[in-house]
Length: 539
Image (cartoon, rainbow, N blue to C red; front, side, top):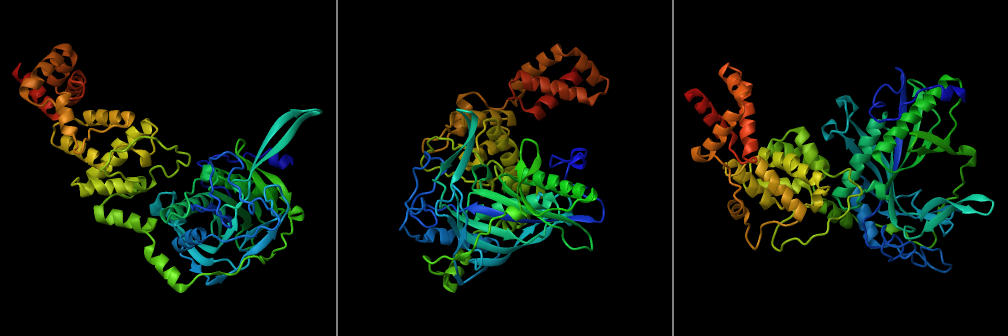
């Protein structure tokens, strides 16, 4: 394998966005997304799913494979699965069937997985990957990815491996948590329509956005709620597709793109050296940024799919589909277009608004008591629109939301959905700044304090203005307030004074900055500049 060791591979997403293959070659990529449904029961038992409880404390007899126990399909899972399929623009099948997928492994105590391989409940969908979404670097990479099918199935138990000292030396031990066994999953199978890792990453992000939008799944990849298997092959244009390799269990978009970038180059290096590509399953080493062999085609199990005899067909009526379709909320593409047109926002501003905390899969809840009667928002889009409804101009509202508020939340490591700042508080601060009663710096200081203390000046009525007055935070803008500050600054900075008099306009801004520092950020910069200019002209 010297040909592989001698070749330099891309192991970062940025390096591998382009030129992975020479001209005349292309990669072919298909993705299977496994999404846990956000429902209060497992797929075939009433047990509550959880990822945070003690191991093996949320396990029903059926989940553990006890003899004589039978599956009972939970309606909550069916509803969530149907909502997901509608968001993916799929056709719903009126009568779908369940299958048994047989294999023997410790994480599947039944000896088989109940799935819908042959007649799934949904098929023929599509996911639009748009340049406007901000995930693609080139407009020509935009595409519609066909969804071949979506199927309901059980999740497996969670396996954890560690090495322990034992007689005879270190021993690798597998621990199993059956809390995850039987959790409701949907498997979303795409057509092999993608050609680059960047397109694949954009596709997974879009699928996650759609699932979150309809409440079907939280899509938290770091917690295992969304996992991906990717199939990738390469071929010369005009020739048949090559043998594909499957990369299993990718749990982040970043790693998915890195794994694809490496695998595409690995396959090309092998073909260039005269070696055939073997169809095989591979894993991804996150530390090294490389893929590794898990099993070859010859070692792949025969799953022996058969009909599940203990479950009737899943029947979905037209009336149910119609009712669910009418209740589907505004989907990401519709929301993106509406925000741009209704508020005349830039593509960048809309993308930031819609993606705030989207990649933060492990954000921990921030515990605090919210005041009664105060409106809070679950996401940045709702927050922005609440500001506009409160009378704030759209551009000002988006600037304060994504630049000022988000900056302070990030500094405090508080996810936006747990922000202690309601829209009415930021709206009042914006009004005070616009009225030149406080400076932007003072507004930032107040925001920072409220985020840190989780307290807002509210006792049934908002008390922002009273707080500003009581603490002496009002902006200094009168001649009487600014003259002592400006006079002192002119005396302390003779070089800048001389520079202004010699015609260097930037020196005046340095003097204004000195006034701002001396006032603790409370001075009105415009009024200070005017007064400084007047004082310099009179002396």
